[in-house]
Image (tube, rainbow over all chains, first blue to last red; front, side, top):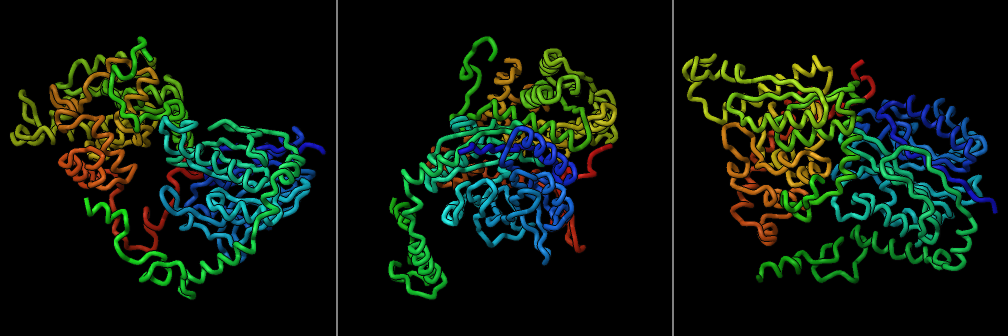
Length: 318
Length: 300
């Protein structure tokens, strides 16, 4: 089987400068094509920059925007994943990542989980997507896309794999923080992401592609460190932290087959069990069913009764 | 490292505060370059006191954009320690950056007066407290720096650290005024660690930190705390969200915890943009929210 050549565009988008970023995408697509890439992945909001705030509405594009058509025209004979602010017909703004192939938009993933805590404020400016779909692609394997925070929710990579994805792609604008010297690579954020990507690769026996941006938006810096992880959790490509560039690796789809036959975790998944138990949990949390495992006196959506928690009780005794 | 002396011999670095200095330098260099580029500037300037904070920032800026694009402005007052100026001058020579000296004594004395002659305030100026004098000196330095930012064609880089910001040991619109601050999220102990890593001269790293507002003043004597203890306390309080009781359980003296919590709360106003009364449909900072640097915002 022909190897699949994946190119990760670890770029530093200019905040709010759509035209400039579009040109950069075109340059890198041309470079990747010359290098024989089959799949070129750009980071979350690579076309607009991340910390947009009220600029979001000004850089938003409908899917029929001519600028997207220009970009799509550069994808003859290859696949690309690009990310931008999508405005829906009813004027909601989404953080979108599109799979573009052979000149056309094949699939659009709208970011499902919008972090609005700590340094994040996404829910203020964006609408959350409602769909998880793996799609077939010209690469000869199903592709599943998640945007950054989507992969901090266990269900997303699993749903994508169950839906047929063999290549899980996460595009990110992950701000680096926590410089404690004890961290694996001098950055707490990088350590966390590396752990997650390997875990998903192993648990879903899929190829995991992580493309994170670099550069600075206002106070925050993005750490890069894009990776391609094999289905057994092995590192196939680890791009440097903070350096801008196009990083390329050859992967083999045969490795996914081998791993799934040797370790048939996906075969053994029990989605019907998930549904049953999730339906029960949802009903109980909504107070529509009695929680058989709840403590006596617990409220309709709680497992524990509203008395003093054990830890605090211990504290009081001392 | 200079002269092969171990870090521990020069200052105390609490374990939990140790950072990866290579990563820090990388992020800060990108930050400085990004801030300047987005604002349409190629040059920077800062007030160099001879202390470790401004010394470190000078090194960081020089590393990010080259020393030839950095102007260090030395702004002594007549009672400033001569050693501070000597340390600042040595640092300028070592870095090879541009420098200027502006004696702020006539500016400050012109207002409060001096032994030789009364100032704008008349005889009342003679009674001004050291705090008032210190604050005016800090604001005069700010005014001088911003004037030089025009002639130098550069942005003013902030040199305040996280410790002094959190306890409010700053002058509003004085030393805290800047276009951007590369070390405002580093505790004093981390400033020392980074300064040692980047090659700030030993004399600057090891001398007692001082605002140099009057002869012999030191931060630690004035505040009644040591930086390693204060830094650890703030780290657990702010970064690790520990409650007062939990802080005491970690071994901090309850009187110190209480005092520092008061200082942090009392100085909240110094760390924030002043509130604007909400009247119109769209108000800056509330529901008019744009990145500080966006398309069209750069000087052309």
